[in-house]
Image (tube, rainbow, N blue to C red; front, side):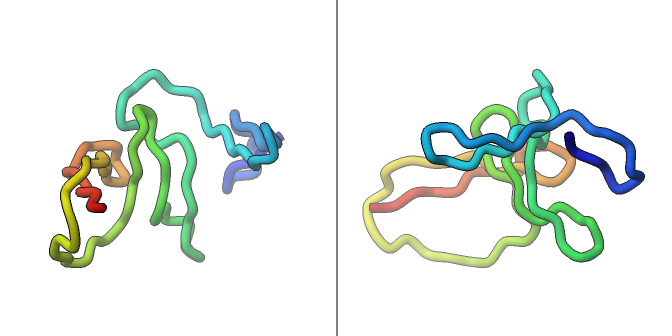
Length: 90
């Protein structure tokens, strides 16, 4: 059982699946909705996983290509809105 900041029980699950620790967040069918995350000391989610195979981050740095482009990964903000793509280089 998981508990929210208010102390109320929340939907979620922590499990071991094929030697991988799995945190299953609240179920949702909405694409881009946060389902699991890591929060700072103030309870603000700074890094997370969203429904639809994407990452949620708070804050971006600048970068330049260092190899051949091989793909992209979607990035969402804390509200679940797509904000762009993270390029993947070889």
